[in-house]
Length: 264
Image (tube, rainbow, N blue to C red; front, side, top):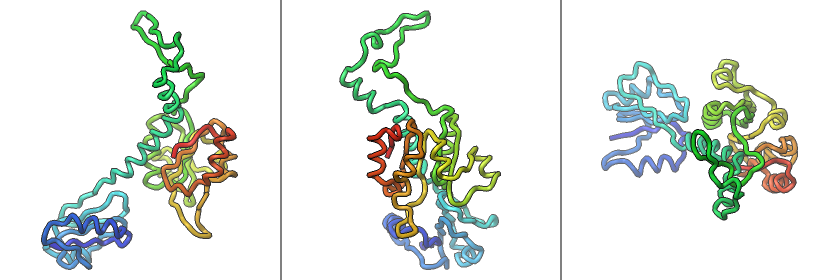
């Protein structure tokens, strides 16, 4: 049985992963001729591919991170394969935001060390039930509700983060080279801002853009200048490539109290 991978953008290691999982007698084809399955991500499945596969075609598989078009009149099942890694990154971004704003690591360490206030750790009798809270005696702790999230790069992961952040009642800003059309912005509930303006307005800044090397790249895109624009109460989240952030500048900003924290 032959499988044709139509998208040259699918990485070599992905091809090898597919090859390594094929049953005995299955092969990866160089073209669609006689293919039982066509796999794609961003390359459209054309009528010519379908015709070349002919009666052998049994399935078209489309990675849902891509934008490939499949003809509506194709007579075989079309499978959209979910990218759980994309969802995982988006959820992890929200986790980091909540952990930072709630001071989770510090509170956990102090609770484990029994560094709580006696008057806060004794249940109080109310007309409903015994309750107590804030054992550690934090002066304040944050919430995501009505806070502003600035997203750098509103691609697939950035959009997944936006959907989840919106559920928390956050205000959403974004910046990227190409602005979305108004209908897309309205559907996602986001507003475009230039980078500097977005940095200054955001309570959380989350990076989701691609890393590019070279003279025209974005190595250290978030450096001392950008960090200085952020609020002293703001948090930087980076679940993209580490080199998007100037590490030395970030350490200095944290030590000097220029920003409240970072989740990496």
